[in-house]
Length: 212
Image (cartoon, rainbow, N blue to C red; front, side, top):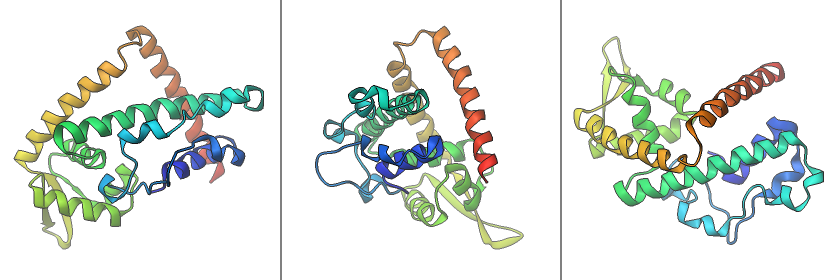
């Protein structure tokens, strides 16, 4: 997976090809390698103090940035703040990582399980990275792997009964955390924002489709 700086660069390229904005995220100390699992070196939430807000560059020179870029950085900042806090709480309360939570969330929607390739597409990660994580989750008892009857080379990955119960316990807390983080946004405004972001999502998909 790309580093967080690389992820911002990719997003900026999609939004408008603005390479000079690569310096908008600055961190004290060496840059981390954002791999699938935090124990492999991804940025941890308690390192936030070393980062400057992604919008700082815009505030320093507001006239040099258009509305689209300002909106992207606002979205990126909000998403980063929420993600980092969720990572911190998962680690603190459950000794769990966000990628593992995402994996269980995908499997929770499929009672009969999914093949590795389908999970990979849904999580937008490479099968190689995912295979290692699935192996650890099998060893921990959260998921099972069963060969497909028609082709034993293909394995079905599914939540175990215990894993499903543990996921629901963690997911309930996750929902509480998000509710508290968003508590300052009135429900009506939240619904309106969701609708507007839906339009933005369609615009981005349409633009990506034309670029391919």
